[in-house]
Amino acid sequence: MRSISFYHRHYWAIMSLVYGVLAFLLLWFLIPISVDGGGPSATFYWGSHPPAVTFTQYYQQWGVRLQFLYPYIIASIIVIVIGCCITTVVVHRFWHRNHLFAASFVVSLILLLFAAAISDVGTTLHFWRGPVMYQHLYSVALILKVSVPLSLASGALVAIRNGLAENLQ
Image (cartoon, rainbow, N blue to C red; front, side, top):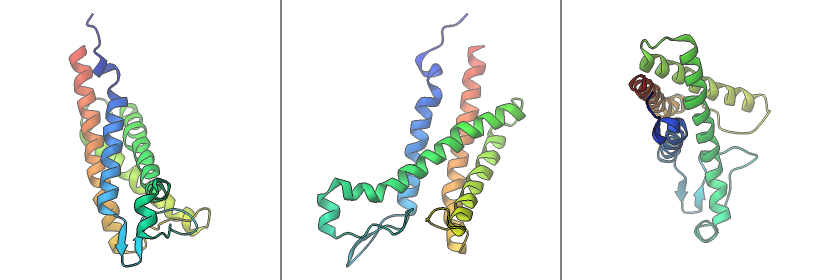
């Protein structure tokens, strides 16, 4: 019996962190903080109102910058749960080592788009306040720009993990 390396045992913990950083960076670069003459403005936020601060407050106070970062962090955590946890469970439950990459990609994409729809429904029904993803064609294109690369990464993670598991046997 082969011994299992540290990397094999902690694959999902390590890859979830990498996947979360990828999700954060995609969101950050595709939906950046808007800066105009009045100061920075949040373009991606949940809550009653976006943070409204001056340049001085934004650059001098870490707590103020965190107000802008919270939505990105929360969305990244949601994406990690969908892309690394739920997708993996669904794929391994319903697919038997055939086409794991494609199955993971499709399942992850559907779940990410469904999560955006749930967010829209919650916002529309006033359960919470947040962005509405499916309101404009630009927003739909933006959610696809985020969802497709993350779904590809999810498919790759599941396929790589399956290959590592086969090498151990």
